[in-house]
Amino acid sequence: MSIITTTDKSFQLLKGESLLDGLERTGHEVEYQCRSGYCGVCRLTLLAGKVSYDEAPLAYLGQSEILPCCCTVIEPIRIECRAGRQGELPVDTDQYTLDI
Ligand code: FES
Image (tube, rainbow, N blue to C red):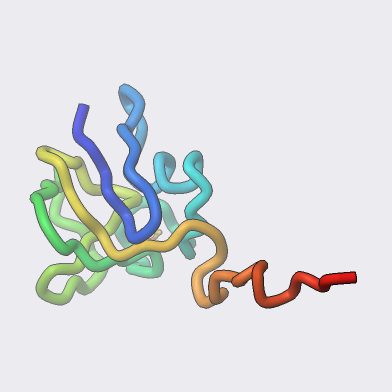
């Protein structure tokens, strides 16, 4: 089982689980539409490691971009993806404490 390292977490994919499913299971909210390599909405940046595809996806992929819905992780990878909703900034809870 390959280790997936995102911006916030590390985890292992379960047997038969797609990278997109694994990201969702571990609290990452990745945008998606087709879940089969057509639309490109799920694309993420691969920072290290390799993935492969059973069939070449129809969606355009730039250099270092991967489609987590249809790729196969073939070795430990590091990807740019945050836990929680994309676009949300992490909340610094210390900033909102109130001493009474
Ligand atoms: S969700 Fe459409 S290519 Fe991944």
